[in-house]
Image 1 (spheres, rainbow, N blue to C red):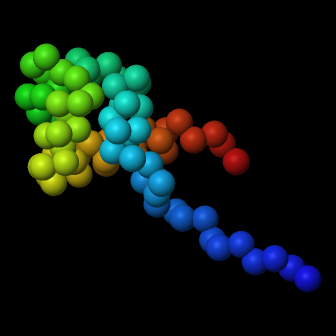
Image 2 (spheres, rainbow, N blue to C red):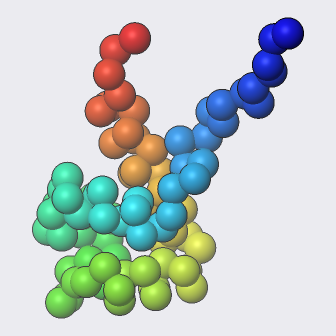
Length: 81
């Protein structure tokens, strides 16, 4: 008997929290590099994960930019199959 597994989600954001997304971007780019790529004041003026999460959860256009940058970063870090 063959066990069928559900297909893996092709969405790179599947199962990833906004905090994990932001933490990965900060770890890779640092706050300065993140602010240079996405012009958001909370990344430039006394940045913190907590204050940035609060802003991003209330601001869909900013969250969208952050998520797109994360997806781009994950595609470049993906090992070759």
